[in-house]
Amino acid sequence: MVILITGASHTGKTRLAQSLLEAYKYPYLSLDHLKMGLIRSGNTCLTVEDDEGLTDYLWPIVREMIKTAIENRQNLVVEGCYVPFDWEKDLDAQYLPFIRYICLAMTDDYIDKHFGEIRGHSCDIESRMDDSFCTVEQLKRDNRMYREGCARYGNPAVLIDGDYEGTMERVLSDCASLIIGRMEH
Image (cartoon, rainbow, N blue to C red; front, side, top):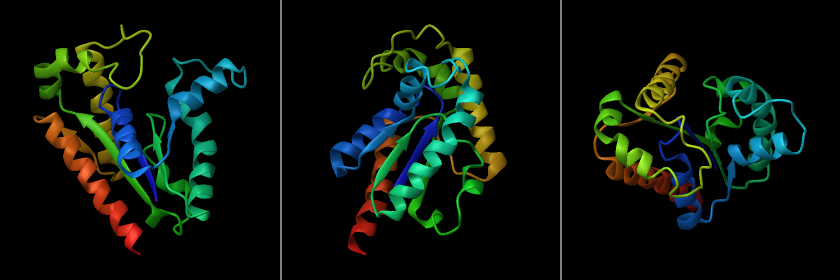
């Protein structure tokens, strides 16, 4: 089983991946780690600011890693914002039953009401060296892009609109049901 976790910055992608690792021993691949390894090693001229270019660059690599994990009947969580909305078109139908796509997206209202909390939790799992880009308007723009992208391509989006903890518990519970169901077969 491969679980793709994507969404805007600060939505809890890494937290969810870490929870799956701790609860079910599912290893996870951080696309941010892969990105930084490729950038720092000089294997790409892209920079951390090149989001669209990074998606185009990373996805073919990640896609093949996903296929390899499925072919080897291995579990993997892939976490990061560099998963294209049309990800399914790049995978043969034989792989799709083994992939669960999760996109976390906050509503504008949630961001308005909880911006301080969102910023306050930004280093819960990973240390952010520079979080100055995180403004109310930037978060709204980014989350709107994910909500619209999911709608455009028919992908489900987990909307964070009120009870963040409850929403994350529900997503983790849904993943647990999926994982346990797979283990029983």
